[in-house]
Image (cartoon, rainbow, N blue to C red; front, side, top):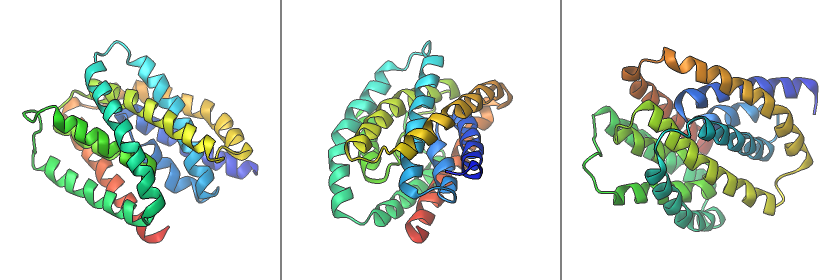
Length: 243
């Protein structure tokens, strides 16, 4: 790997870490589509998963005082049931079709949220259903965030609890995904080297992002989440069409 490649990946990781620290999600959305201009797609995906696992675990620790255990456990447990089905889809369906469907799902979610679609009165069974979908997407597309972001946004959680729940759930799911990659032989020496070099840069991005949180008005936080979620949907559709 050349110095130019590493510097480019470092800048991408730095920016993606800031976004994730501010909103609790978006690392893969930002990093993978940009990293593939400099490294192969499998390297980009596995590296982003490894770095994001460390990033989420750090922010989990940083937000440990926030009470989010019950909802986090519901989402993690239900996601575990969805992951085997996601593997089946990965082996039997065109991944481009899966990403296209994901993009459509995300855009519909953004539309419902923008229309003030409120899930606070729905039973906890809806949490479990979104967790299952996240598990399916985790192993079929390596993109588990959209259903969780939609759920927490529509449940009207505060920005602090929103980030805390996502970081707890993402840490567990990313770790399981990373183990799956390792068992499949996807954690190569290039991935290990790149992730090892990128993690300190990611730490700097988290540090800066945490300090920028106070500059975001909580009343604007929900709108910014919708903008980022909309970008996620467009990114998934673009990946399905062009990659």
